[in-house]
Length: 333
Image (cartoon, rainbow, N blue to C red; front, side, top):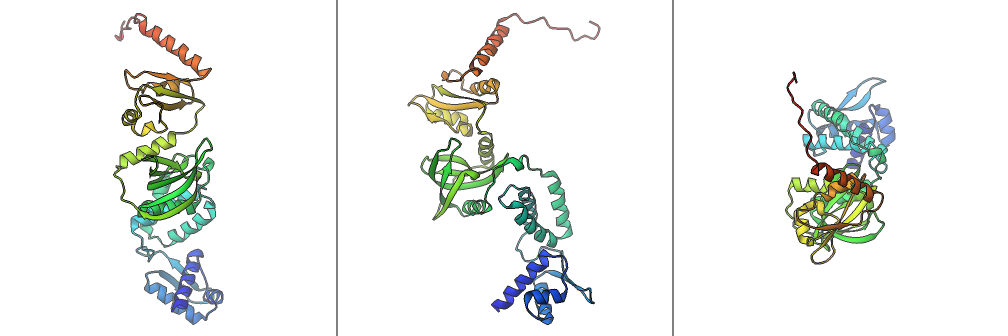
């Protein structure tokens, strides 16, 4: 029985990988008689696979789309989602992505009903990954392990290399996995730091399954999305500074929420918060979010420091100067 099942699966794989096979070709590759091939074809048909057979010298077998997805045990929505995901992966987001994902995509789409195939094509036309070509490669094996740990609520241990090059060992409770901008991110509850942390997956290594299950912490879809949005924006900037504000760390994190990531307690009453941007204007915008009445200092370097001071001087002068006379909006004036 095991040999029969194994041969049927091998036959199914051949039918999914190639559009048309003659009975002779199949029997030679499988090492059985053509009569056995016909019996195996009948078994696959009983499982729901629509296999067309044509008689004659040029005849043979081909796999056709059925009225429903055959026993991949997928719902219509899951099948569409999988096909879209494979199309995205085929744009070289994953290591060895083009070959393996296109092969898997061809097998899946070959058996999709016409209506589902139309949905896949319509969605694929509007799903345009941005900047994928320049993104760091991510191992599909690691992505798979992380996804399973999120699903099964299993604690993980891994090593993580930060942007500064520091490598640490982390113990986490994985919550969600998502692509954002040009990278993949893993949102976790960090057990040592007792707080939420977002990790770039391409910087993860040596993932270990602890087999310890946990009860997921409450986090809304909006909060999860915000964590990923912050993580995608948290990259090294041309102009960076540390602000030390007269606000205790816990109060600062409560005020800033997810945007307080990267902050560290300086003293019991002050908090250090890194701010950056493409130029001094974006750095100034970050400073403007410090709560009203809270004093702070900055180590902003030159030339951004001089540029920011000159801009603020002109702004203050404009605010202190008498306002210009209003121009009449009447068309005849």
